[in-house]
Image (tube, rainbow, N blue to C red; front, side, top):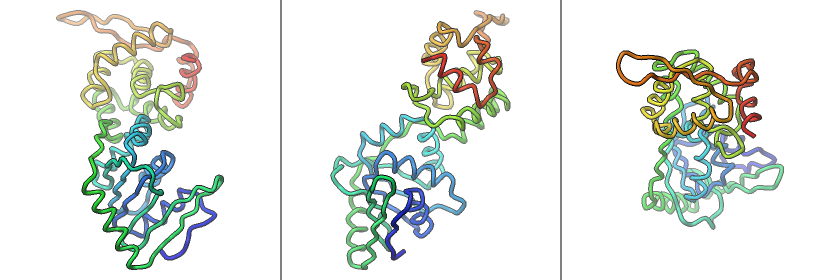
Length: 271
């Protein structure tokens, strides 16, 4: 790749660089660039290069608070395509560094420019410098489970319908943070369980086992949703011990909603 990438969207630049390289070091990306990188990598039709992402820790933490981004990133990590490390130096330019070129990302408002340097001596020096910085950097501990594992285990342990509803709800959302900009993964899981009338015990055990959240977090969120009228429960007797709780949707607007409308209906009720 020898030409500058101007009049482009960031997705286009990332796609071009990933398709031309065997190894890419992504240096000091913005939050938007990290999100775009994960999306482009997940959607790639071709095999991916090794992607080493070296970013400010605060930026990474903020981006990975979104379950949609983090669970897709975890999939890429799980398959060996992506690694995350942190740097305290956020003064550097945003760069895409490969063995053949260095691309500086320049945000020009409505578009992003990729200014490309391909002088052999300069590229070698830059690659060696960031390769060394990578070796010295701390690994970023991503605790979110891979989305493929979440879907597979949800289908196995709850039902195929629950997995389909979960996937449809996620696809209808731009973000899954639970901070006012969207539902979080625990709330989504409980709504899916209620739609499919699963037991609280089963969905919370699944959520804890797969790494979404603890049983206590599921219980607290269930109580909040029940208090707000989104979820109802009924007791289900068992042979030994206390009855378990079956989850049901508690509002007609949720019961009448299709899977792709459930998130927006729940968000309106939670507002």
